[in-house]
Image 1 (cartoon, rainbow, N blue to C red):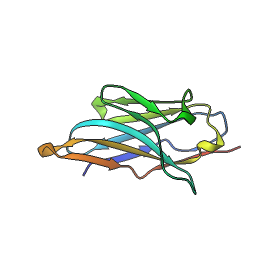
Image 2 (tube, rainbow, N blue to C red):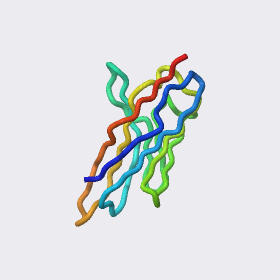
Image 3 (cartoon, one colour):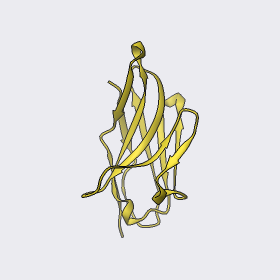
Length: 120
C-alpha cells in the first residue's frame, strides 16, 4: 500500500497562514494527481485543490487567490500553502494521491488527515 502522511495543521488566527505537507511512501512507480480535501463537522468532504504531474492545478472557488498547491515530484510530496485563512476554512484536511505502483498496478490512497483550526 502507498502511505500518505500529512503535517502542518495547527490553530491559527483569522488572516494567518499555514503550510500543509503530505509525503507519499511505498513502492511507488509514479504519482499522477495529488490533491487536498477537507471536511468540516457536519459538512461533506470537498476537494480543495489538486495538481497533476504536469503541474496543472485546480481549486475550489472558496479558496482561489488564497491557497496554492504545489508538489515536489522527486520527494513525492504535495504542499498546500494557505494564506488569509478564514474561520470557515476550519476542517480536517486530507491528502490524496493516485498513480502507479509495482507491476503496473494503480493506487488511490488517502492520508489520515491533519486538523486546521482558524479561530481568534
